[in-house]
Figure 1 (tube, helix red, strand yellow):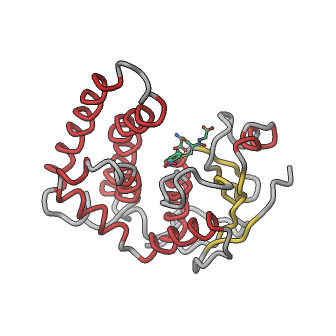
Figure 2 (cartoon, helix red, strand yellow):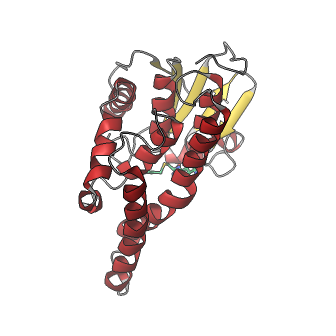
Figure 3 (tube, helix red, strand yellow):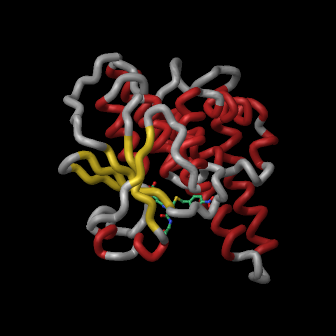
Length: 237
Ligand code: GTB
């Protein structure tokens, strides 16, 4: 598809964890940005940040909440992984359909991923990370798990035996699969075999593999191996 909006030639720089707490599993949200850039075949550089640097003014100027990822392209700075993926998808072929209605549906799936499916998954992840020592943790956990299964069941019914959510692969699938990947260590996806297969299909895409390898190489401190990523920049500001 030809991109409808002009694309800048400026270098793209994204911020990532200097050392991701996921140990290189590609679960932090720079992964969706890397993946979108790989699907779009756009080179990019990374600016790795420590937790301390993320809270300093130089980074708060990019991201008001002091988080990763951010996206810089010339004079443009963006935060919020969903918005960044939409920006990339609107300017490059391969992530949104040309047909206006199909495009609107793909964007709807992007919102569904980050605002309907992801919140209960994040609640569960936070509970496992920060609430295990609370005496109410064991009572709360089944409630959180039920909320996830509600969403997964509805998504599994809608996906049925299709490869992707609405025809060809779109940025909606990219964000949905990135969100579902956060369940990889929970065992919860196993109860929904078509969703597990959907995630595996996403992970098998060459662009996903390049993005995954690039984040893993950065985590391991090795030179990047991605075809389209990634140089490393220090925080100059
Ligand atoms: N809504 C924002 C977006 O989509 O961009 C949320 C951004 C966000 O949560 N960023 C996290 C962050 O910067 C990293 S991705 N956290 C540091 C902070 O807030 O101080 C979330 C994340 C972190 C770690 C894992 N992991 O280890 O598995 C997975 C996901």
